[in-house]
Length: 254
Image (cartoon, helix red, strand yellow):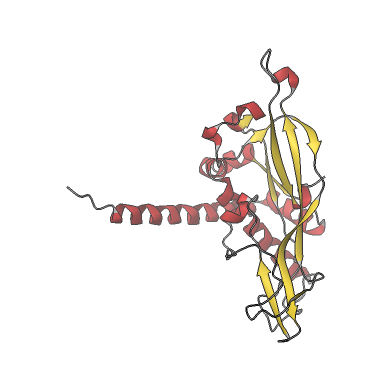
């Protein structure tokens, strides 16, 4: 006997899409709270700061949304940051501090622009997801966790290329290439178009003509690797403290 699972798969996909749309609506409602609006206004006036979302306050607002943030942080962070970017953009448009963003390259909508991104961070009680490096196990994969420990090693801050711009003297045409970031799971939850193909830095075009890189137009982001070690007093007797490597990006470096 053969069981047709096509309808069930379609129903699961549809229900997942409906759940995401419901969560997006909840995120928008949370960011419209009076207290949160005050924080967003402060962030818009002070670049380089993050919107701190307290999980305890989020649970009081919606237990379903708080659980979604903990269980599906990749999608949840993208929802919060997209809504936050849009709200700050609206604030700057209303105050006249954000002129036409497409004025630089109106003839090429794909041209990369160095726009400022805003981020969120989560604080408060993480419950079972508040662990030490020894407590990171398979059941916490793809979940939001808070790791308690001490930083024992810090790597150098290195610029990671996001988008490169190239120019061909022979054809007098430009070329734009976007690169994957395999260390950032948050990019997987973004609704923007994902880059495809190889991540090799191009030096020639499809017709084997040499390309010159326009480094001033390329987009980069800071990246740093740190080692977080379990505190010695938290380690079991007779065992060495465990440690994990954490990748920091953008404003989290140093």
